[in-house]
Image (tube, rainbow, N blue to C red; front, side, top):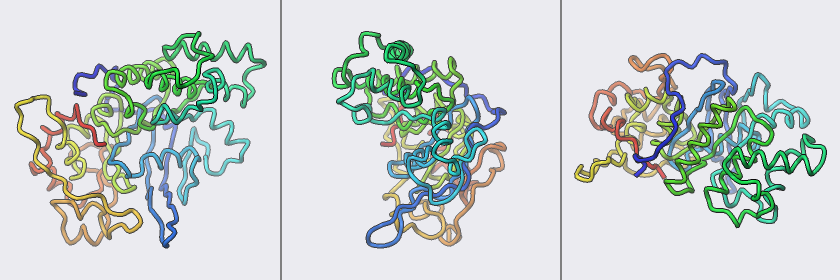
Length: 359
């Protein structure tokens, strides 16, 4: 069904030479558990987002994608690690300095219903940040700015005095995007911005985001379940499993030549656009381990067809693969064996990623 989606493709060209706008280094976020111990929601994650690019994060529900995004924005405190935005250490900034940086880092939330205050008009919702940061002198100027933002996301000036319940889901998400644009950010974190919308509306929102990127030179950290969306929209993609990145590569490389058995399993589960095609073979059994009690060694080994004794003892670090290019890294002791096998359905599965929804 997703295969018919018309999406304006953000460039998937291999080289990304621009200076990173966001650097994440060895980031960890743990939550205490009443019974003792900790949930390792994000574990030693490192990556960079090039200026003007779209960086995708994918993985099963509960793997830590949203927690990672909120930690980067300092909405959740980090346990350890570092985040740099445009060269500034986000976690070391004072409250005053952080306010200035947050003007340049905004977020679009997953649920367009709960993310909008039902007691506020659209003028108040979109214009609140303008008033807080003292970017408008009076209400008349605020209304003019809000009307311009609504027009930019495809809504009318007459919507300014309405309330969220008067809009459809897609219109509410456009309001959320207008709110994120109000402070003229350079980076927008999109936390599954289309997963709660109908397919036809998804394509409209994705096209809007792509147009805004071209027009405003935005960078995106794009979190999604749907690999079809990520493949079309993102320049680079990281796959998360149990709080860690297990594979990262340029989008085309990842979908054409997946190396990690987990990535291959996700791609093999893709819905094929052929009604006569046999159902895909089940290649991934069981559930992710408990993040409060992760297994030793590679966290994926209880579900992996290639697990060896070494996988059960030692956790592999992200490393370059032999044929994947300098920016293709994978955390797997058996990555080459998995790539040579047909268990992951190889390139054929990657090519059928349109229509895959991991949720």
